[in-house]
Image (cartoon, rainbow, N blue to C red):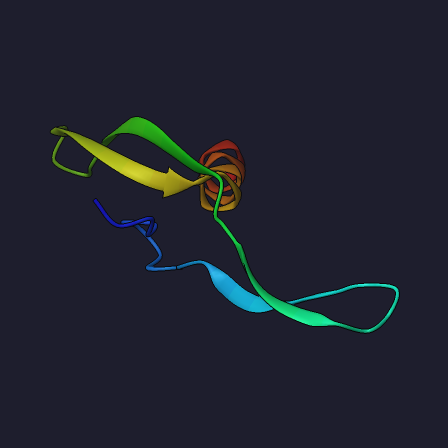
Length: 65
């Protein structure tokens, strides 16, 4: 199973660790994925792996309605 947000499609970012001596080594910033059960507009439950940032946005949108 890929480490990808099933709601937004976001994936891990890549870049470099840079040490004090300026050596560059590859690294990844992984997403904070959470397994949640969401209810869609038709009332059906759906299990998704969603990034925590996307989940916070969903909660904010739900509170504003």
